[in-house]
Length: 132
Image (tube, rainbow, N blue to C red; front, side):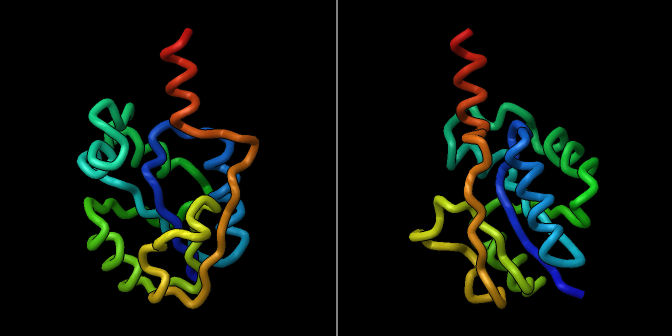
């Protein structure tokens, strides 16, 4: 069984997220998604985030047919431990991490980068809502 891993905060789901999950699932048999805890999102993105709490985000991800498992993590170390535990065949990360420090890289057989689709971004959606 070929295991695929991806992770993020997935605060406001949009078509780019769905395309990410679809593309990930097409790479293997089992897609595992890691999701940042509320505390981690606040730390990484600021006090006003997340817009949707972990229960909301988890529930939304559960409804997506491409996703087989979801795990919540609250720190870089927890994320690395999860990736190490699952040792995915493919670790899929955003294209903006191509030259960055990819957490768990050494525990995956392969790392692939996924570029944004259609310029979608939760931060852009939030900004648009705030400016209307």
